[in-house]
Image (cartoon, rainbow, N blue to C red):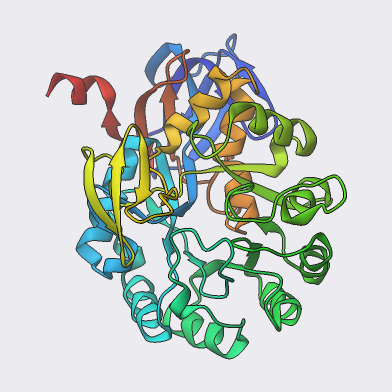
Length: 391
């Protein structure tokens, strides 16, 4: 028999409703929404001082709780999957780093064979960050594995992954990037652009060939100049592309986030974490890929002369809160940027990222200050901040 959740506000697919009742069917799906004056018969879960949002979708995340996707360890991925529920994430794309063809293929085999076994946040695909990059803006990517885009290599990885690669990021200035973008996007895979010193024209050529996302916009790319627009200029000015954004207060200044969101609109900006294994862990020394990293003051940085940012320790629940606290967007827009936009941009919007009838009832209960109270998966509570605080 269905039950109903009663709340002060609901962030539905096309509207934000004040008050009402959302049906959760006995098989863990969303059902019908009833307005405040149409109280349904049945069990009611009262959250009348709180807000209901779709579960968040993290499409760019490398690590959590001391684990890294590059470890190629299913038990570690399982721990990440369950830990993500505490971050309000109910769907995610495990994200690789630049590595050898063979290592990446092995990771594809592991995830492609086991993704349905995830006990926490659902693995909806794989995101390849590299290895088709260039050195100028390499960040924490290892340049010894950089190479030109190869459809043959991609097809090998995709076969090993059982078709689970949903997104791959490349540098537009590499030889063959335009043809790669065309071929791979035709297969229904999102092609993103990043870690690149490309010109505006090179980025534009890839977009017109099918690329549709910019990887952690502003970070790891040629900047905007009034005479040379660069990658940032392409990310900001090209129509219909979606821009990743790391809103931890370190990767970009909040004023820059405002500029991008005002220009593109919340419907074309997806919040990501780019988090590494130190997320949800204490400060100290870690490794990202093959590089030593130290974590201090909310930042992960390479332990070399560059001292470059090396991913983040951001949680997606904090990213949606930050953009509201920074007075950039309304709560419903922040939720959109952390759920539907990332899902749609990675072509998984048909299975997650929004509250619609007959979809899996993966949702959050938010307090009115945008902090996370509860996470539900398939209509069942899987995380409670109140219970966690009591432990």
